[in-house]
Image (tube, rainbow over all chains, first blue to last red; front, side):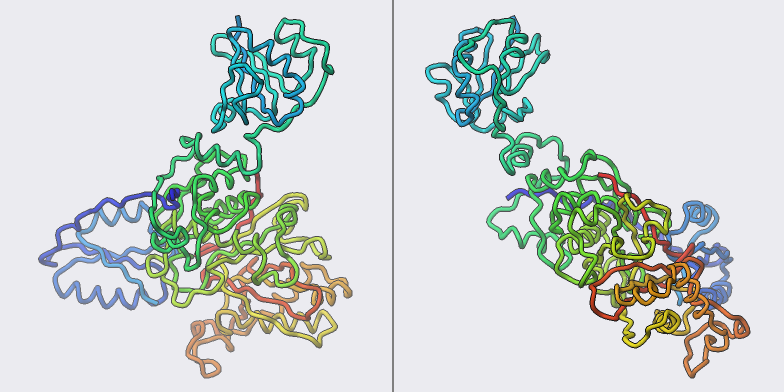
Length: 90
Length: 471
């Protein structure tokens, strides 16, 4: 029996992760708050720890947790930072 | 000399009547006689037996006899049935006067019940572009499970013939792009929706409703991606208004929110299958619901607008009663409201408000929207008191203005709540426009229903969307 494929028929392209940071010293780390309650509590603590390891931090925030991050925000983080940490919180 | 093509069938009385004319035309060197049902009609002349009906299908024959004249490969004239004057005019010949001057034709075999879809599946394969998958030696009803296409219930195998039949329900092109379905943001065509509608069990006449529901959930303000990804209970609910809800036999009466009506059941299911199969949204994948709700199989009903004393949900959004619409809402399951004693609108409104206050959490405010589904017997209380729908909403909003002291964290011995800094404020349970009323249900029963929404409503989350249905 022949059937028509109900799916999108997309095949995701396999991508290698970027090289991991070997050292935080002098690196700029983005801290992305997705706008869920208490995300700031989590990120404040992470920020303290990162600074103790010599990293510079920069804070970012999504307009709402219910939608994917706007392209401009993702591009800004990618352009300005060496790594990003995202807080899911609640 | 122009080329003549004459399509006939022996089982047609009109074709039998004009057999002398068929013989006459068969003598012309440029005539092709196509017989749909036998090799020996007309007798003793050479005919092309169109056993597979491919020729008739490609010629677009609807009636026999059909006479087609073409010159240099271009059709220049066509007539069907028997009309001597017209045939003589087209052919430039004088034809026998021994038979009546006029007889209507008969239906072409290409239009026997179910034949159009069978022929399309066989001879119009290029009109559908989805990948064709062949399965051998398997139970076709197990394929949907094996391939991961199923929502947990059996699906109708989406054969090309069934998909062609489904597409007859819309005037839209199969390749029309409806939008990109999250979470994969995969392009979704009418064809892909039709395939999933087949699997859900839809009839072709439901397809315009399904397409519009897909369009509605893909509106940015509906926030389908977030609704799918959330840990909350919700999924898309569909309310259908207008003439189409009646013409396709939807249930807006007894058990409107329950099982047993094919349109209600399969339209909601088809939308969910599109999200699963085209969008790639599956439980345990991007669908992160902690519990979900049974409405994520299907949640679709019609409003009983003809028996209501109030404007319909669609009219509330500016549509006219003769327009058919789909409204989508990010909904949890339903919660009943039982009030068998109230005979005044003031008392019944207080019952509704008490139920509405509990959604999500009695201390949660400005979170979920809600749909209040009012049954006929409850509506009668408001009808008898001449309360319009707006009046009821205004009264409910007033009853749901809650002192902050009752809502703050720790109040009533419950840690959940709003920040202490808001304790002196009075806050409404709902955001502006967050409470809507729909009328549905059976004639007996002093019960109504609350359908609560996703905890993220309004600009930060989902706003209900109403769209007109086009065929």
